[in-house]
Structures are given as C-alpha cells and as structure tokens.
Image 1 (cartoon, rainbow, N blue to C red):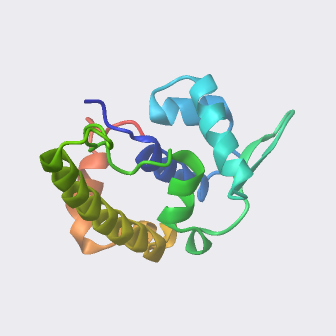
Image 2: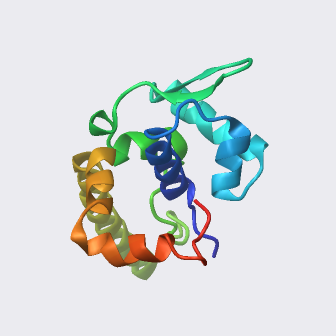
Length: 154
C-alpha cells in the first residue's frame, strides 16, 4: 500500500522556506524531486490555510505568512491531507452479522483513540521545534554526513 507523504513533504518544504523566501514552484519541485504541478497543488492547500502566500513575476514565489514557531504540524496536516488518518477499515457496516458488528465496533474504537492521540500530538509540535531538533547534538552525525561528498539533495 502506498503511503501518503504529503504531510512530511510539506513540512520539509516549509522548514526550507524559513531560510529561503520566496521559493518558486520549480525550486520546491527540485527539493521534493517531483514536478511543479504537484507542488502548486500542494502549496494551494497551504495558501488556503493561511500558511503561505504566492507572488507572481520576477522575484516572486511562495513565502511563509507566519514564523515556524506559529505553525503546528496539525495545521499543515489539515491543509494538505485528506480526512482519513488511517487506511484501516472494516467490512459492511450493515451486514447483519453479529461477528462483523463486534469486530467493526472494536476497530472503530481503537481508530478513534489513535486518531485523537495523533491529532493531539500534531497540534503540540511546531515547525520551530523540528528546526531546533535539527540543531541539537542528536543530529550532529547526520549534519556531518550532509557536508560530505555524497551529500543528499535537499
């Protein structure tokens, strides 16, 4: 099953944007290794949520409307992701089978609890916290690898 990477890819771009604004769709597409059409579609959702703006013409592009400390992972999720957080589902809701009804109830309860916890945690983390983590000692080895000759493109 294919994973939905819109949240992580959007977070990646927004943190890069804190250092370089404005960024064109082509620049963002290079970072994400995708095409500009996909970027514009994603960025449009972020614009509708009031997280970014775009300006056309020479020197234009996408810019953050707020600082990283004022943007939560939950806001970005709501702007770019669909309604369902999990792909787990159940069979027919109205099959008339007692076993299926009991299974559906327990799966539904577990999904509701997991979704509530995930949304709470996404709402508690800002992009500034992610950025601060990048500067911590925990990431020193990764930073050193990035500066080497085989550095990944970001």
